[in-house]
Image (cartoon, rainbow, N blue to C red; front, side, top):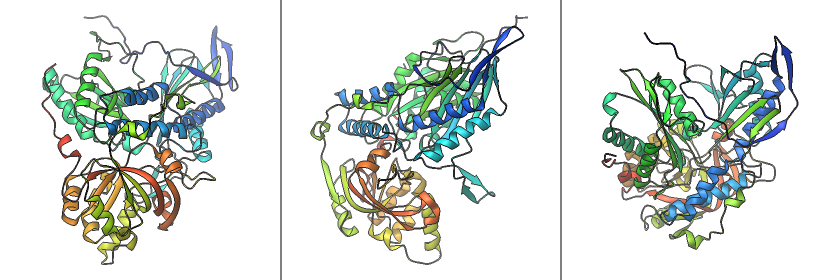
Length: 545
């Protein structure tokens, strides 16, 4: 027999996070049974959550900003890499003003808390935390994204971005520690679980597997990514949860080797090898190059002998997470970067390189298509003029119109269609944060819409299915990629007018008409059947370490 030994499966090291003090209110101590207890009022939880969710909508960690700045200084970065990095840095500076959020998809609120055994609260901690989420979304220019099912098929927006995902744990100590995250649909949808076997656990098989899976991530979640890969896990859901935390760099202080008790650890050598692999894919920072990922985290977990779950998750260019804690000294929140301008170099357009083609949208659609047809995929564009905005629900409604035998709405015949949904419009602004949504969700509509004379030029983020490429080749259409991430920059500098065209009852899912100036885009799919992502998605043979 062996002796009992307990070990935390994810043993974290010392917390080196820089914190700022929010308040000393709502926190006190008392003595009982020879122990000192920390009394935390519900107002403390609400305050901490409210400030955390507001900060991550507008601010980023210094390390993330430095990684963007490094792209501009790397001679191996492509012109597209540098262009995307510069746009994201500009976006960070606009968002830091606290008016426009960094991304229009202001996300699902996710809160994980670890409550020490000497911490006493007033009761329902989840309610107090939810109140903080509610307060932030009610008082900021953030979008409500949570849908409440009325039955299996009908849904309504909750109108306050609740419910939040809240998970609280009991632990040792006299502090209450938190990780706050806002997870938009783009990056959340790029969380994957694969049920593998022992056969994967050798260098050649593992690298070949990872090579194929990271290519399938595509760009819909707005790279450059913080990529996390977890191999093993006592259950499928534990592997996925660990990958989410790892993508937030929450597990960076794990040990770097395992032991016989079964603790999780980071494989830092494999992290560097996979990072180099991501650089060789050619995907780059959305439109070709080296910087598909900023960094990689690889976590190895114990597993059941008959199971080998593998989980993959990403944190996108809207890298929204922040640590918080409540101690005897007060309420503290991680210090994010309030002055991102220090990371923004004096980079001119000529230094970025690459031709930029100006496209005037104040012309008949036939002329716009004829001009686009002159240029190859990957061409960088600058769009000016009118376009319409429609995404998931609007597309479903237009399909109903076509299926009933009626004509395609004229606005989809006359204008380019932008897949997007705005955040709230601040007073004095033409638009709220208004970045692109994931194009792939509209793939099923393209052939039918183009056959009916509309949707000939589409603008969104991410890669499309082969069916879209075939439809564009058959009908003479184009798919233009917009940079995923700089929603605040687009709203402030590129969108000059916004009005509802149809379905106003859908809120941000309505059909809009907007006016844009120098709106950046790339040709991704052309009318000849060329697709930028077609070859990139074919895995290369990963070599043994």
